[in-house]
Image (cartoon, rainbow, N blue to C red; front, top):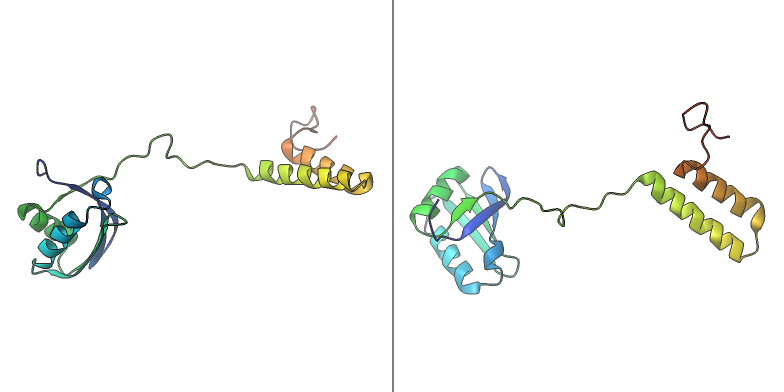
Length: 147
């Protein structure tokens, strides 16, 4: 990889089209103008759309992306590197669908209580929520059977 060259991450690639991201150059209009003109000069590149605001460059090309990458490296434009690995803070939050439904049922039960409608809607909703949350399980069966 070229030392000192900006690193591009492949955001999307398919035959004849690729989107590269430059997270370290976000908003740098001069850099993206330079990359755009440099890539446009390559014989196998048909179209280049640089977007400094998003930090990306869309390339429509005829050769394999590897050849375009090698040409960009030789021209001193950029080097293609691996995407940054996700850190623990980048990891999406996962929700248990049963827990979400149980929470919604508890909310509906509380709403029914505020309307002074205790039986059967509030009680039924709380019963279903407790069953989904695993509050009422049969100790003998060890499964989801209700008591």
